[in-house]
Image (cartoon, rainbow, N blue to C red):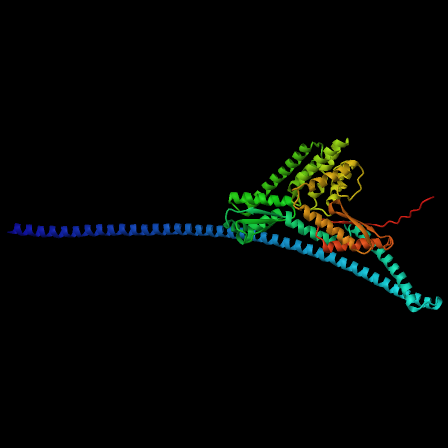
Length: 514
């Protein structure tokens, strides 16, 4: 019994000890698990914070890069707009300077006219005083009636006034020739305006076809950037209107217009139209046009058989490919004149080489008449002297319109060949009927003027020669007669270029010895 109780007690004690040991072990295991979980949680939190910090830094870096990129784009756009504004400002400044120069010239002309009017007015006052004095003296001395004296004095004063007016006109014309471009401004102003109007209608416009009307918007570009770039680089105005699938190029310089046309055609084919591409195509077109000009000049000299020309003269000949006169290509016309002059010189036993050389170069001034002032004849003289051409060639070129006296038979042949080439049927747009009507109208204007006996239109209508009545018109009066007829021609007749009015007065005395 005691042993059983002891066994029970030992068992209970062992059970209690086991329970205590199990509890302690479980507690320690639980605490260890909880500690590991807490450590893992801390590690996860730390990792999350690190990743969040890294992500934050990446986003901040990306944001900074985006801001930098946007700022660079904005700065580039600002620079482009600033450049465009500066170009516009430069154009405006140039236009303002040109307007200021024109205003200054106008003011000078007005001042000159005012001074001349004052001078004429003073002379008229002096004449009036002299007339009164003479009337009083005549009444006292001669015993003439007032009406008779008045008639005598008026005739004398009129004669003196006409003489003074003629002298004054000669003085004004001489000053204009010396100080300006050797032409009387009042005589040539109307002719220049009419010539410019005809010229614009014929040869200052080129048309570039477009594949579609959407291309117009691409040519204009954003805020007109592309069209401004084309106009600035070429110096040619682009006219984009309602004309379907076409752009008009307007400009007086035919070479620049050809460059603009080629560049625009290349841009249309390429499809990439922006300022940088435009500049590239314009430069490429300029090189092509220069090459064409050189090639055409060399081809012209080879075709005619003229060698050892100065390279610059060859280039000027090539420029004539893009120059027209009354619809006739000037380069082809020059080659034709050279051949005709050479043939006629050969038939007459003259210098064929000289005739061909002068014929080929007779219109060389037209290659530069858009850039320099003066007629193409005067420009041609300057150019040929600059490049050391012989005086015979220069005279042959200068005399082909009758502006200068021909000094050789070859020079006469050049004028004849020029007239033949221009008068060939189909060579020029002006019909024979309109040409004859213009000559008849020119002679009619002169014949209906008082004091004119006969008139003849010569030099293909470039000159009218007038025979004055010697008993009605004095030597001083012919100056005013030429002036009046030139004014009538300017107001009543439309013509290209200028017309020379040549008034001749001649008195012959004939007697017979018997």
